[in-house]
Length: 356
Image 1 (cartoon, rainbow, N blue to C red):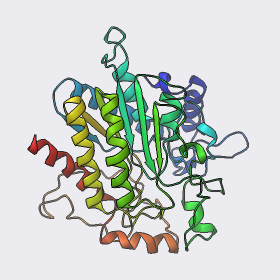
Image 2: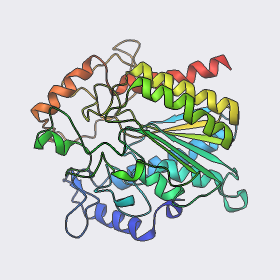
Image 3: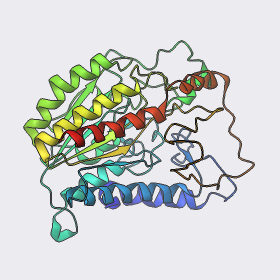
Image 4: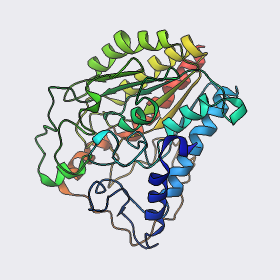
């Protein structure tokens, strides 16, 4: 399914680039062009290609499980994210690939709508709802470059025609480069492609300089819900980005973890009304993780019991130097951050499933 989403030269280039990285190198640019442009924010190692493939495989497995009736909804905790990865490098004139390699959401949608005779699930219509703080230019580029009745792509993101780049009081050169893109641009990353909706198969909803709970809620109720119900999808895919959180270091959102839980519940209600609840969620952005004092009790009943084993394969000499401004931002995440958002997102699914 990956060659249906991404052009063969892009796939080959990415595979060759990653294979050429020495095993000892951590943090090599993966998506730079021949002039070295466009790769500063999309870094990785020799395991990055496999990780991206596994992310797509997880999305396809999730679609199989949901459509096959094994479960009503699924959350895939995959990285790297994918919604900025388009048919080719830096889709829709973006200045970079925004941490993304393969687009798992688009691949799942293509797989789900492929005829059963060709190895797919044979669905007629799939809706993608993207609530990452950035517009999913890659997903729109793959599924909706022109109108395709199989797909409805909806994005709720920071930006708008009146917004020009970032406007944060901490935006010195160092912190600015920590944001997507790494250099100045017209509008918030990935650019102006999310300011308008090119046809009826795309609903782009820019929510201003910062995404607020009131703006998100109003858009979901007044714009997204009617559009989804009119489209009547057979499956809903969430591009679940949590970088609109109030403590995320990108500084583009004002949502709390509970707000993300509410967004999830609204999406679930749409799914139950239109497609018997069938929904899969794929992790996109979200970077508010405490860097110095990790919480060990967030998902664990007690410190003795480990439900998640993250392995011990990180190199002992791996450096994780955090700039001072970013460290200040991440310190806020000890109170609430990215993991809390994921927790509330999953709880939103559980609440809806219990009610139904």
